[in-house]
Amino acid sequence: MKARAIIKSPKNFNKQNTYGAAKYIRQINFDKDTGDIIEHESSLEFNDELLAEEEKYDGYYVIVTNHHAKEDQWAINAYHELWRIEETFKITKSDIEARPVYASRQDRIEAHFLICFVALVIIRLLQKRLEYLFSTTKIIDCLANTCCSHLKDNIYMFDYYDDVSRPVGELLGIDFSQKFRTQADIKNILARVKNSSVAQ
Image 1: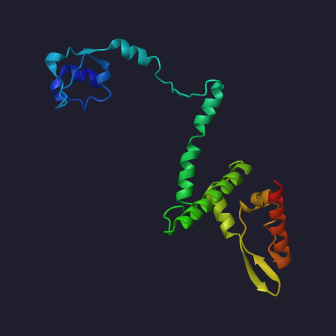
Image 2: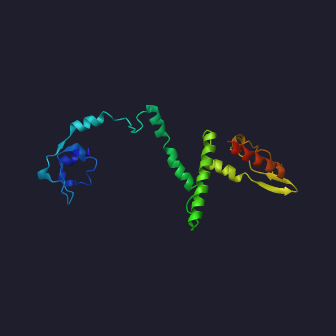
Image 3: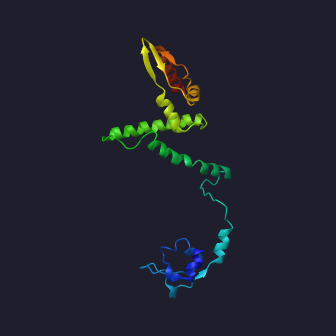
């Protein structure tokens, strides 16, 4: 153990390289200017009691919370969900491309981040409603590729369909498997989705 090595050869150590181990040594003093251990002011002795106390908790992971009225399981579940915060930062940077910002006016910068935030909320709601079966990247790719080409007259062809399309379509009330639609069909879908969004 490093603390025992410090006690044995204090000249080889200083305040910087004893970090973490010094707490197990009683009466260790450092020179304020150099950081060296002042041997004549130190009575180096290993703190067996502190080690024994800390060994009681070996193998345990402690979660600290200020929500004392909550159940233990609530704190555990909240901790397990923290990774989603990190993932959200990653999504805004990579999938939604919040950065870099190619705008200089304050109002346009604010508009850019508002759009990114709304997109993030929508994608997160979709992901939750889909019970996290798909990553945000897969959902965004599916929606981005779901577009149509004008064939002739009033006929439009939807030529993209993947494993995400069906559950997303069921959630939104749109049959993405239907390959050909008229302009009236498309307008009806947009109106229906808009009305259902307003109702909710």
